[in-house]
Length: 138
Length: 112
Image 1 (cartoon, rainbow over the protein chains, first blue to last red):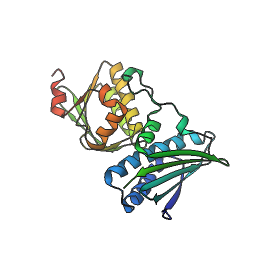
Image 2: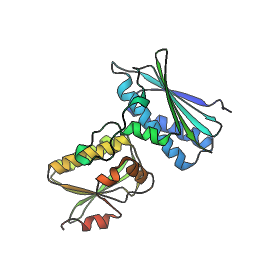
Image 3: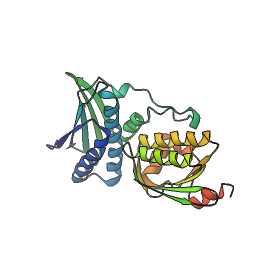
Image 4: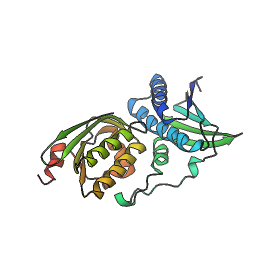
């Protein structure tokens, strides 16, 4: 059963992160997800948003629509942008065994998204990226 | 995020509270860089009041730690708890950074 959910459209600008966090927190708690689960969602949401801010619009400014809703036991968060195609699922896994001097800065964000979500999907539909994350909140 | 510093004999204790995310992590980097420029090289970072860290926070930690090491300094982390601990463990950062249970324990590791 999917509830009608809610959505916001924000500028793909890292300074807008607090708006996204407020949106996720409010709706996750209202749909009965616990504090620990909400923290995981906030982490996945930040990483997805930051990726869009950094890479989706290399030529300038863009926006992102974030929608959320409950689907059976799952809380669903979807990020939609009109930027360059980027399939998060095909990104390589970071090497977590490396020591301090060998660590490269990238890759961890996507790793956190994978770790925090119970289902993750990416679609490219008529010029738009759809990243859908599902969190089990039973 | 708020950052407080307390000078101890063997190190500067840097207590970070709140959130270390993509918006606030640059503030941490800026603060450590300023302290480094003022000649401070030994740090104990107290994360006891830190509620949240993301990859941007870890990245800031990594880059400032490299700068500290370039200056032959040292940085020890203390009091990593809750969500922050979970993120450290998940990312493998818990095993690449020297992590101590308390600030006092970390301070004891340093020449006084």
